[in-house]
Image (cartoon, each protein chain N blue to C red):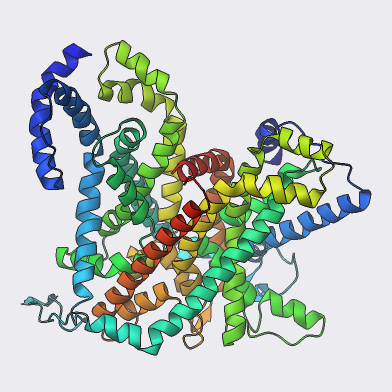
Length: 339
Length: 292
């Protein structure tokens, strides 16, 4: 080991100064012997993470900074730099400071969309979690045909999302979809699944729950199987009822898994682009438009494309999600969760 | 298929937990719940499969079987750009996966094994970039691609998908590396291997299943991506499957025949692979996520 590292110490020192400067971590020089060893280890680690740092910096960091900048300009399709034929048109948009943010936060469109986005997220996550928990508990019992049931219940997760969404569009079709045909069969009038604001909201939530339950179920099932069976046996000896066992063993035992899946699925649902975009395009009107699809609409569906507005909404979404994640962690921590 | 997949599932089941006796009525209720939910889970998929096998004129009837035919499939392949879209999707998803896994592998290892200044920041960055909504990056990336002349090109989309796959792969591979005992690294050190040598000769071969699952999952993610693909690609011959499928169903009408046939051709291979890989997939995700 020593033979191998002695050679790299020189490089390590060089590598570290370069990196240290760019990362802004000025390490005070302690005893030379210790830092040598430390540096050679860090040199390895930093070299290993370098590709990801470069990729993140170049294709995520730079666009992110640019996006934040765009959100403080009045950039639209008409005034960004573009090429028309052989003519290069320079960018003519200008800096407008916080105007876009003030406009978004004081206008009704952003807040209205945010309201529905919250309803959408909370209902999707809570229904998905409840169903996933119920199914996981059933599948965790000794029951005939368990593997077959498990396989069937996982299927929605295995199908590419956009394919499933089109399958649902087919089922929801107002005139000839299967759901309305079945309703017609029992003498009920067809429901305008995707053309009535209320039904459309119901329809998109149903599809998202259908898509999300398998992940929830599988994750919770994994959590259930990691709870030691002795705990249940002890509780049974003490004569605890099924509900008491669920309440005092299952739920606490599932906490690490459930806090994680709830956080993840909240973030995923909040940003769930394909379901809304492919099922209703935010319609009818703007009834099912969530923040992400509306931000997309600003830059890719209206004319002229409003890049500034879109970026503003994008930044606001990110801020909201990060706030949520921070608060969520803090709440867990005050409840004594080591997370 | 069920027979094959049943076996590992049964092996993985831990010892039976006896929790009181269950009445026959409770058993019936449990089975009934499972049957109903299974039907709801499977039916939309099954219905698309059945519809794809019907001639177009019966596409919207409720009959399960009537004149089974493959005409939708032959039409799809002969008259549309389906194969081109399929190839585009495969190339774009494949490249972004390979590059993503390649770039991220060492990072997953470093984050799993070493303590180094900047590690916490990097972990946070990896986590936060996964909650980036597509809305934050799509406009700037669109403008950058436009100025580089990469819009409507596969390369542009591959680069864009790296923003999703690189942080994800690094994060997930950390989870897999965490499950490999540290004693192996130590034995490598004893044998005089550098950390790179240990990683390359000892750990990477052991992590192959993990790499495969990560690669598979990031492939599926890119395969099913809608927002960037819809915004960056235009023109029939440049689309990916997610864009192509939208062609069949728009506000002016729906061609359910080719739509359902295409859905089946996209979904069945993905679903088969998924169902075989899911055991490892879940382990990896929960390892990465829970230990976070």
